[in-house]
Length: 148
Figure (cartoon, rainbow, N blue to C red):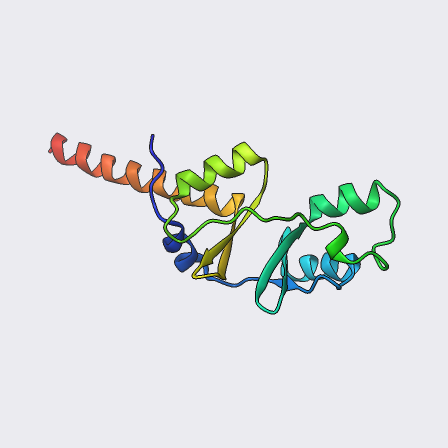
């Protein structure tokens, strides 16, 4: 089954809210912001430029397991960089392939050199489920129309 739908449409439905912080922010501030915003990753930006991404996974692997202080470690030291990005023209299927192949959970959406949104693996899965439910409804309508 081909997974259709453009990331631009997904962002349009979800909203383009992007949470970010500067590279000098502490890891503690990043984790606090993730908890407050109920997200699993934040973009690391400076002057509108995307420098990296920091996630709960980065925190667990690069701070906790290494015995570092979250209050004293800047996010620049643990962020993932360079960041794999997509455009609004990429399909949901292409993005599902990327997150699976690269074993990542978040994809910033870039358009004309600026971040316009971010999609998570959860956003992609929800899109696929919604698309499948719509297909099922269409098939049910078609079948019930044939039975009449």
